[in-house]
Length: 154
Image 1 (cartoon, helix red, strand yellow):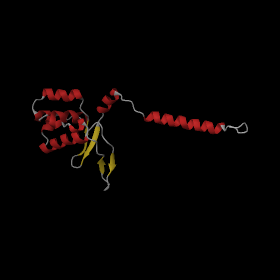
Image 2 (cartoon, one colour):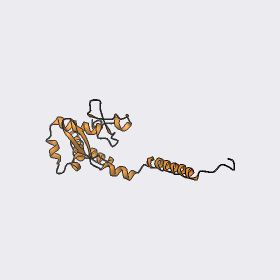
Image 3 (tube, helix red, strand yellow):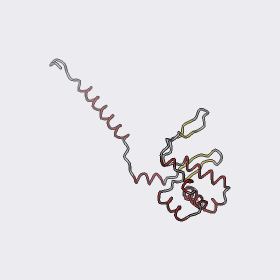
Image 4 (cartoon, helix red, strand yellow):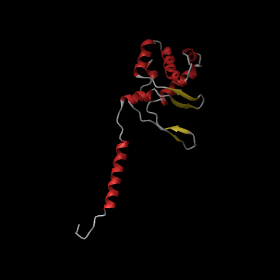
């Protein structure tokens, strides 16, 4: 730069501010794993929609809750009822185990399958399909999504 050229401090400040804003935006996008936040989110009431049953409200089971049910209920049918009850009861006030037992078999099976496949912690946002209805974005298979709750009880 020659002595006759002047520095445009306004432009330099503008560029510095743009760089700082860009860096702040990048840092905001960086997520840090927080186990306590994961536990809190897992207990939030979630919703999935079934074309016949409507909106299903539920919570996720913790690792301890699942193991407790497996240990306490040796019969596969009892396990299924308890799993469903434990997931649905926090979101459906007054629900009792007997209410689940009185449901038609195919409804119980449908709920278990729906919660197992679409009721994941790692839910993908829904996007409109070509015909305008909502579809869930397909998940990549992982070890946890390939393991089926039903498989644990066979």
